[in-house]
Amino acid sequence: MFKKQLQLKKSLLLKEQLNSIWNITGYYWYPLSQTSRDDVIAFDFSYINIELKIDFLKNCLIRHGVTDIYEYWAGKELCYENALTQDTKQLFWNSDPYFFECYNEGFWFSKQRDWIIYFTHEETCTIGGEWLIAIVKQEWQDWNINIKWDTKNDKLFN
Image (tube, rainbow, N blue to C red; front, top):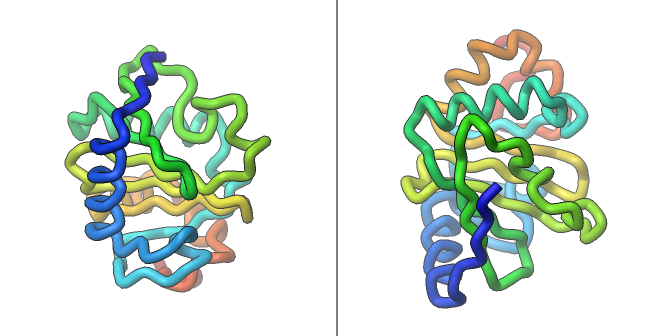
């Protein structure tokens, strides 16, 4: 997989824009911190961290026209750019062997910033973006029983 470290100036600009668009106001984000955005779902990490679901997300992004994914870890200055193709095997938190060892909070998004994926050290995974959430809710029939951290989605009726 192609993974390129971005220059500091570009990294800081991307993070500033992402924070503004997605209402990320501190080190942590939803569900560990509040957000004004309603187009988010916080899943239990064990539910989403399986190859089938990661491949599903990858394919959704590709069908949406995403060719590059930006990645940054909270508390780090630099962002990375990852090429996204059907051949991409290591994606999101699996793209770096040190991710879990460092217990970082990770953010993944594209240049359009119309979706976001956020992994927390508390083993939650937030998916954001109206178009992506609509597809996930339609495809993952049991999504609403795997969101114990989520406070924005009705666990019984969605």
